[in-house]
Image 1 (cartoon, one colour):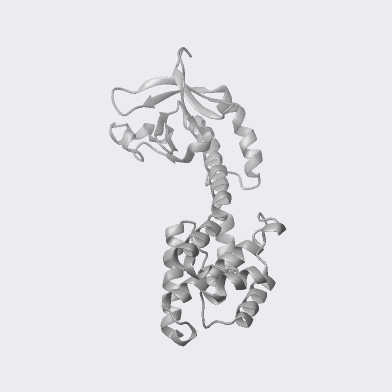
Image 2 (image 1 turned 120 degrees about the vertical axis):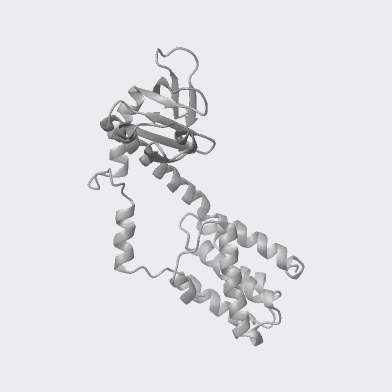
Length: 276
């Protein structure tokens, strides 16, 4: 398992994790059938190892919730016959001493660092600093040509409001109740006039393409044409950073999902064998 997980990073999606571990456990059982009384036991142990690794090496999990050796042995000894208590204890000690890590070579390290920056961003400035530099522009707002699902495009005043943070748009005279997308729901920003279904409905002149961009939300897109490429670039930079910050928050919240996955799968497959 340690060698297997050193070759790649586990995906974030629970179903993908399940398929990866199931493929590993099936292959391991085929080559070591004598070590387990049932095929499912290899699957349960594989998930147990990842669960233990997550519980005892994730810095977000407090010490009080770390798994002890007795807990690990108790969870597995009845379900994993003929694996012995001594073997489980040795497995526990090895994982607690050294967590599972992906071996990342220098090329991948360089690629990962470069990929954290947009082609339009200055990589000498931190994401937080760049966000501060453009927030005041977006908060002040600007006039854009907004494209919708039907009808002709209209000029709209687009701006940012706080409490809660949201991207708003309303009539250019700033009358009426603005519509909005919560910034925490922004997933991405696309450049150009052909990237979304809304834009594709319009035959936008090629010379205007570099003024167009789309803010991608969880439930809709906001498709805009700026008055200049520079204005578009400023707004695109801002929403690229917002999308990255949102992605980081989602990643953090998903890091503990593996704990829930392991627990559910263990209960599903071994409930009767866990009883004292």
